Image (tube, rainbow, N blue to C red; front, side, top):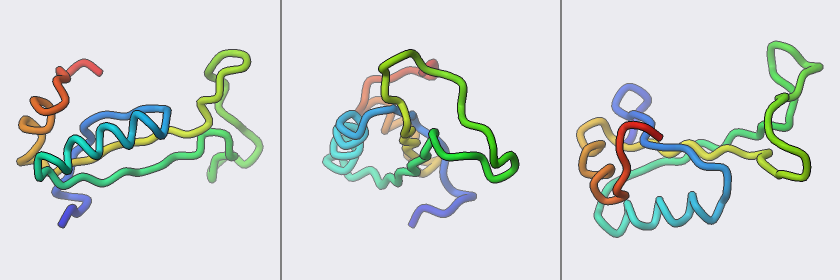
Length: 87
């Protein structure tokens, strides 16, 4: 089971298709993962009148998907996905 103290962020993405591809590849290799979805267009809890001021015109990046794995599985997950520490 993935608990807050036992997990680390592997990567993040902005499209559901990319998120689905990453999580399916991890699960095919028996690596447990969870996804946290962040709605970037909703106001902040601390500052209710703000929205993120990033992105470009006509680009829909309103959601961000953060993918977490167990700390012990992080290196294996990076090998499966072929990613480095810079992402």
